[in-house]
Length: 344
Image (cartoon, rainbow, N blue to C red; front, side, top):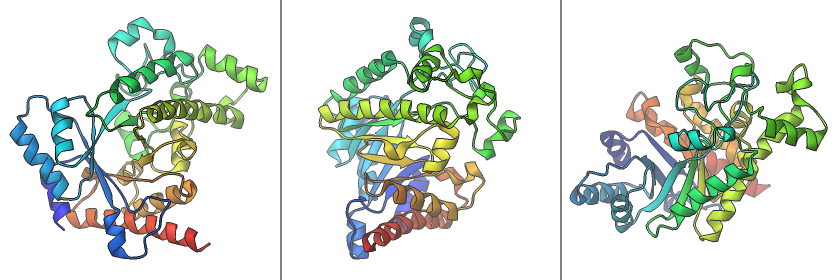
């Protein structure tokens, strides 16, 4: 399989792929192939020469890659990729924003855990986990301006949101050993956000002082309140992208159930051009077959709202044959789900 060899040789960390736009169902395998879209994440090296970039992005296109999510701005990379027929989207960190200037100017914008600790000064897990609170209108405006700035550049075709969620209240199980923790329950130091703005808005909406509850983490209305906070932010940024007539996509946790449970992401209710679930099977100590299960769950619940691109983490695969199995499962299970729904 030429594409498998190409991806391995280039050392790419992750790819996303989809079988079909969900609002259409192909009749034959040939027409399925014509609708394939494959994306890669790239952190552009600003020092690379044009000749190198032309060759690389031409290879991307020749081997089935249709678009690139760029982690940083670089007009040279974007322009050359576009010249080779690739879509170019700017990948941005959304609610995880640890830049020093922002921390100094607006420490009050950052999320607080159930113990009252701000991740502006006491970040969970790792030092770069500095999460903004999506309840705050100032945060919406700040992120809107970032999206506007990126989309105003003529060489940027679209925006890709990452870290658009709360901090992981529970990490993927394979990562527990990295931090010497066991998260069989929602521990207060990882449960966000309990800042004054969140408390006040929730009390105004539901008449409940969330910290007066014995088990606030188990209150269903409080969970929904936080899902809705992120959803409002995403849909606000989606409207911003629409004003530029450019698409907006997002990297999300692997399934709707997992995303809601461990990072408060309700991504099936977002207004996106497409979604890219990070179906990193070994993070969850699952085998390669789980990729198909995760894709089918997402496609089924989205029910044609927008396309789903299955995100695969290449280091998770033990061999090229296993990677081929993962790709095949992602495509077949998405197509099967679509065909079943069409029949109904």
